[in-house]
Image 1: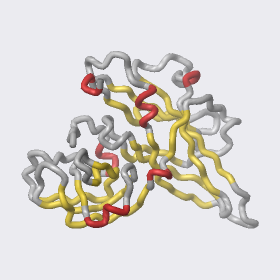
Image 2 (image 1 turned 60 degrees about the vertical axis):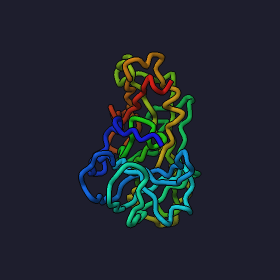
Image 3 (image 1 turned 135 degrees about the vertical axis):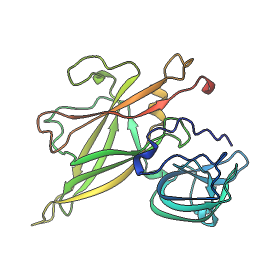
Length: 253
């Protein structure tokens, strides 16, 4: 199993710090509400790679499939190289592989009139610059909906709209991902709007491939900006610059 954790970016988004299992002098480690992805090692062992970078397994892991993701708390002891047996793993929220959002490479309407449904808030909760987490990114958003309505979030990469707020070219190795909110369903009679918050996992493996620079000699980083519409921005989209990124390496060739 290839254990490379040097390029994990923005790892403190959930309030924890990356800790490699290699060379750690602590006898134990407890992770709280960490994002992680289920993977299978080269010798067939199923394990969870959480954002601490400590690969672990436990008795209940057999019910999960490779690619599933979760927020979980856990404890491991006797830190050393290899996959560790956790004392416990307590899943907080599970994200089955089949529910992960995909990104489309297509034209998207970014105008105010074309986006009547708007986020109250939208944030990146976790991402990794390298592919340790299979390019699964965790986002959290809040919306105002009424009983009977549901929210759907879609992600787009539109080649024709890769410009900044002023219509100028983007900085080198920068790309914009458009995030669109669609609220569907008929509100129940007399229903009042309430704020709901949701976590979603997006599979950005295709995006990594689309944005792959031609020259990887200097391990380039491609920065991701997000563009979406919010309730507080009435006349134009909101731009979240440096919302994440991809690290590329010549060793990937």
